[in-house]
Length: 163
Image 1 (tube, rainbow, N blue to C red):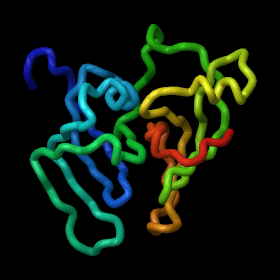
Image 2 (image 1 turned 30 degrees about the horizontal axis):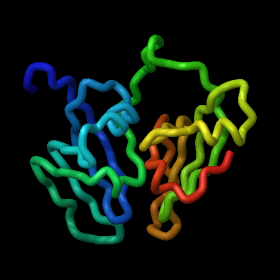
Image 3 (image 1 turned 90 degrees about the horizontal axis):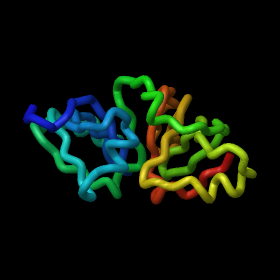
Image 4 (image 1 turned 90 degrees about the vertical axis):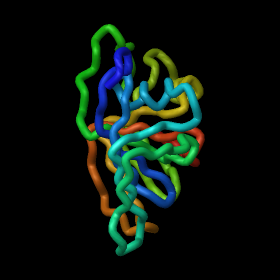
């Protein structure tokens, strides 16, 4: 690690065709911060494992891989991090369904308080949006339902977000 680079943590990215596991170097602590504060449209991972959906071949290993963030449907950190109190803002958790083909995600999105649901959804911005107490699956790809403490979905790739 070079001075000022931050820490390395494990990250799993899901695209239309691949599950990509690797490590990312960042000064950020949360997966949404890493994805939303990326200086470029790409993220460079180390110690990468590329696993293509529906194949029986071995996963591909690589020392490094550059992943196009626009191709990422959603991501999850392999270790849940506790929130930093000074970085949190008061939000109201709402149960939501997110359709991001070929996946479906259910969980809690966190919306601004004192707003009606419609207005709160209009205020929901960011390239990647966090979902807590999340579950995801794909009937099309034969991916079983998986439950995770938190994931971040690509807002521009989501077709439906409905509380």
